[in-house]
Image 1 (tube, rainbow, N blue to C red):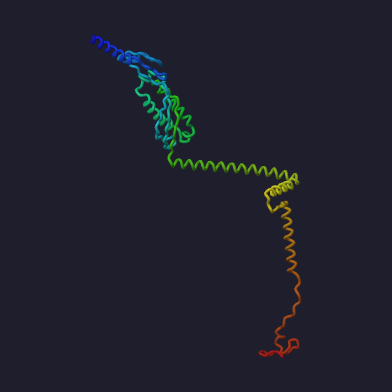
Image 2 (tube, rainbow, N blue to C red; image 1 turned 60 degrees about the horizontal axis):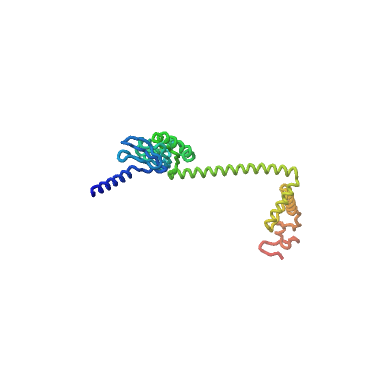
Length: 297
């Protein structure tokens, strides 16, 4: 009796072990590839899957999108500039059987081929194109990867350049280029403004010549603008040519008046004594002679 009970217990344990080995659960985001004696016999859908222990082997494959970072690569562009570029790739398994039997490690394979493709595609572009045409580069990399990975049952959904590292010398050169470009635009805008202002001033001068009162109205408007600022000095603008003419007339009158004062006749002066008169002794008026060394009496 004890032997029978032990045998039944043994059978129950074996049945439980066999049941645990034969019952598999495939989740919603997975597919199960069933191998029987080393040969693929089918794909198990999500849910409960029964297999034959020891004979069958079930390999679960995830169908979710996988994010694969592509490490930074030292790349020389077409214009001989060395840059370091990193990227990120998104892929998912579309054929569970191919992903198992066609390649050993899908993640490692895609990582390696993505690095080489990134280096190849970016090397065909210049630095400016690599910085400005990232969408084109991403599309080219994805297209090349799809050709290789579809044979593995994998589809690449997206490839994006993540970071572009430039040498310090190239950063300084680009900064100088950007500064020169901004100065160029500023000068062009200023020249266009001067041209438009000159044209507007020409039209305004033509209008004022046709309507003389327009200049007076403009003068009054200027006075009103000065008054708003609470200035203590009031400027009365006058026509430039008339002001210059009045100043010229004033200077001419002042010059003529100064010349008239200088040319007035001088007062009468007594005649100067001659040497003969000075040599007479006595009063020069009476003809007296003064000896040398003696004073006149």
